[in-house]
Image (cartoon, rainbow, N blue to C red; front, side, top):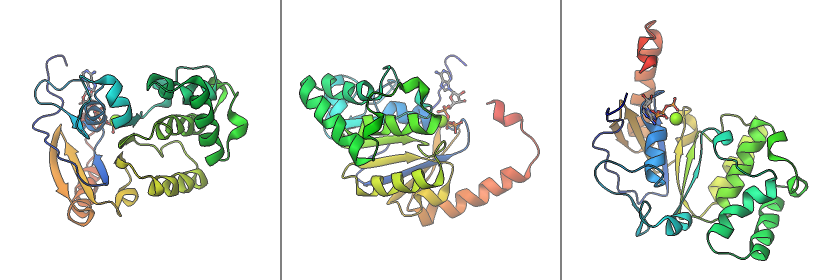
Length: 227
Ligand SMILES: Nc1ncnc2c1ncn2[C@@H]1O[C@H](COP(=O)(O)OP(=O)(O)OP(=O)(O)O)[C@@H](O)[C@H]1O
Ligand SMILES: [Mg+2]
């Protein structure tokens, strides 16, 4: 796969507060999320969030964009929940005391104060996802990129999380396989084969997306899943 362009001609100027990103498995959604967060460099072009070049200014990027990975096991690095949540804040230059206070407040906001000294490895997948989300929210970035944040969550936690995200001031780019999740968003981007093939309001994009998914879903050929 080396040398193959994963994303092509993706130009986004995002002023919208709520952006949904949809597309098939392997269409490039996670790759786009990682580019937006400055974690991988595009071969051409650049990524600026709130005036911060997220590739060059890594410290500035921490306050500009936060990303919730698709798999929390790829995100969690600390043995305890409180360390995991506090880490980004200390990276941003906050003192240990400030970081600890903000961490406690964040845990309380989700009714999880009792998780503070829990071992991250002992948490369930959905609980880990919630810890990662808290670690992102506590940094109050201008843009939050969420890569399938609901996949491991039970219905109640998912509803709580949705409400919490509704209340978040930050702009949100949310990757999902569930069109209903982004129906109320300002804008939806549809990726296919690394290119943007739909970009507009949910009404403009989602109906077409769902129709196309039905057509693909009706076919028995799974060979394209191998990429
Ligand atoms: N580091 C990498 N090196 C080479 N190819 C990669 C790399 N990461 C992803 N790809 C390929 O790029 C394509 C897009 O992958 P990506 O993870 O962005 O898809 P996705 O839309 O997030 O899919 P899913 O819905 O399954 O999460 C896939 O074909 C994948 O195999
Ligand atoms: Mg993905």
